[in-house]
Length: 77
Image 1 (cartoon, rainbow, N blue to C red):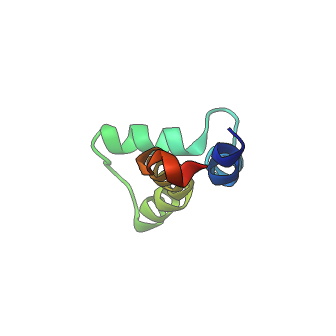
Image 2 (tube, rainbow, N blue to C red):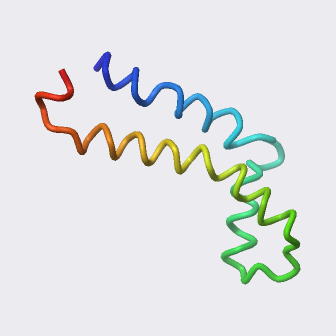
C-alpha cells in the first residue's frame, strides 16, 4: 500500500487540484469534455489548449495507475 501511495499520490493530488480547477459551478474539464462530446461547435484553439492543460493530470494519473498495476509482484515490493 505504501508503494501505491508513492506512485499514485502526486498524480492524484494534481488531478484533484489542477485537473478539476475551477471547482464551481462545475469542474472546468467536465465542461470542456461535454463541449467536445456535443460536437465542439464554436471551440477556439484556446479552448483546445485549455482542455489539454486540464486533461493532462488525468492522463498522468491513468499512466501511473496502469504502470503500477502492470508491474510484476516482485517489482512492487
